[in-house]
Image 1 (cartoon, one colour):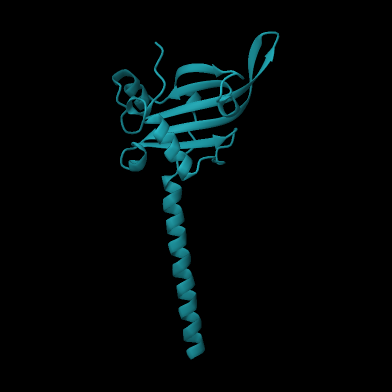
Image 2 (cartoon, rainbow, N blue to C red):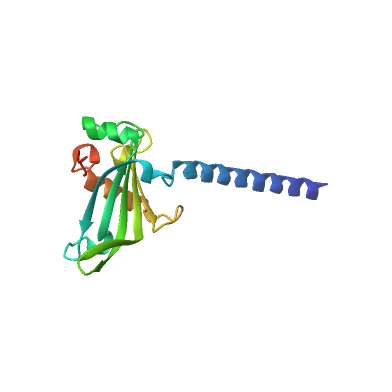
Length: 165
């Protein structure tokens, strides 16, 4: 009987530990920034091009398109981005043929989400980067996210781009 009691206690302990692990995993998964499905239907803010002579070419060379959801458009108009603003930095490789530059494959997709309650240590903005066309493969560590925020802190409300009317 003692052996059965001991096994029951062990099984309950394993169950509780697994439940605690699963609930903490679920909580952190909910804190992740989701892939922004449909962002290409949002407002296109502008397109830029970083060429091979730019020091940032290795990381961001090629075309970069910036998109904003409706809430972020309020921020572009007022200079203060409201909660729920989402900005996309879509970085696309290129090929040059006879002086024409054409898009090829995606390098990465960067996402900024404004949530002052959730992202208190990064100026109210969450940062994420998705590898190539993946909706799940993420490139940013928590240290890199802080580096993103520190760089963006140099600009009004952490946003580099301006809407070209």
